[in-house]
Length: 356
Image (cartoon, rainbow, N blue to C red; front, side, top):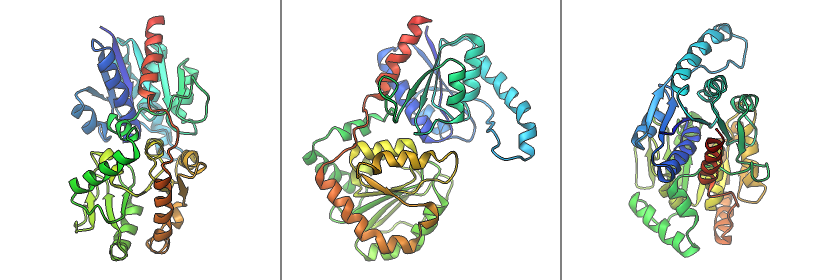
């Protein structure tokens, strides 16, 4: 039996693409055993078992980006994590990594055991783990920038792809059904706000201050607050959710998206043609700014610095934002990101298995 380890954990930006690839293998190589690596605190603990896949947990050992006490204990903690991963990886036939904390020990373990590696980089700027993957001899695939065959896009959920393939008239009907299902008014302009799978305290605080004024101005709001955050009280024009389980439904309902610019979000709103206000999370190596530029450069949204986003800014600019969103929607424009990334990654992985 072919045994494939998928290293994608932490946030939905790592887990959802890995799940899309796993589902492709389930449909095209049904005899394969598919095993996910994860840690105790990530969204994979809910998403992976819910999708019917096996999840093996290891210690989370992020590399410290500043000089502190954690930096001196990191080598020992990473070695422990590496030992945990090697027990899982050593009997596998292939490792497919999607970056993040679990990917680095998976790449090293595969290298030590002579196991082929496929590494997918979702962000416009390559992360530390996937730079390590190249040193380990991985086949490197990218979502942005690089020409084919390395540029494959981002594996998207099936219902997102199906929504992206609807005609303009079908999208109008899908929007009506989505708003009715969410018990919102199809006649009122709808804003979808979310800060990723973990939510955003910044978004939550500013929306809390602005929501009454925005609703009085004739808007309604779908607000993903994050699973660990307190859920505000809902109202006729305000729908707060801990976690948005059906993102395709939420996108179908939205006239405007306000979000961080993680790679998956950028590609989803791009292929769906939903105008977006991107507020990049100011951490890491600046990849969220570069991600957003891929859509903004083609007219599908705009970027606002995290420090500039406030309830006052939102009340002052939302009407003009919504007007630009309406014009973008009426133009029928979409960003031409690949819709078959899961298939492309799957086929490249099968080639590696064949050469093993």
